Amino acid sequence: NAGVMQNPRHLVRRRGQEARLRCSPMKGHSHVYWYRQLPEEGLKFMVYLQKENIIDESGMPKERFSAEFPKEGPSILRIQQVVRGDSAAYFCASSLNTGVNQPQHFGDGTRLSIL
Amino acid sequence: AQKITQTQPGMFVQEKEAVTLDCTYDTSDPSYGLFWYKQPSSGEMIFLIYQGSYDQQNATEGRYSLNFQKARKSANLVISASQLGDSAMYFCAMRGNQGAQKLVFGQGTRLTINP
Figure 1 (cartoon, each protein chain N blue to C red):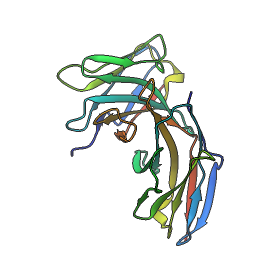
Figure 2 (figure 1 turned 45 degrees about the vertical axis):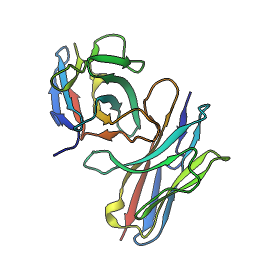
Figure 3 (figure 1 turned 45 degrees about the horizontal axis):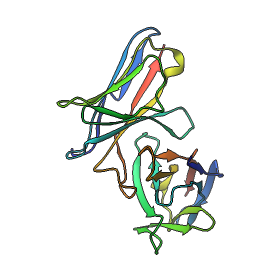
């Protein structure tokens, strides 16, 4: 499967635990984006990364959330000390470059549920 | 700032009819891209069609076409000969060439195709 791979597909955590969401971009794509989708809403941008660099994190909450895209391995979105309000679908997307004509290709998302 | 507005929360259409999903946008970027994505009940985000702000012709992809009216800042999606499998959420999104490379999404339209 050459598409964007996200895992796990579903993740259940208790309040106060940590959540780690993984994303492997499409082959050849070095631009990764994370979005959050609340029920019945559109996707909201969180962070944009290139290999080893965070380019734009303007949509990321200032506390408890962090993202990385190491030289080797998948991009990781990490949420520390999760709260009920973190329950959402988290989507990763990748693109070949940053041209306005480049679509972002999405993974299937991770559904995070906080008990 | 960029903004996407989808004014139709839900649409109901008979199978085999054509359907138009509305999308208006606002941006100060001189160059931008407009995208439509489909999200079936299984949750994944599927890229459908792209329109560039400088494209002279409306984009088409199979049964999907984009009615692009730049002066009105609208980019409506037209689905011809609708099928039961077209039932899904549809999101309009845009991407500018200034600042962040993020996609900005509308709230979505839930399309239901009736047999």
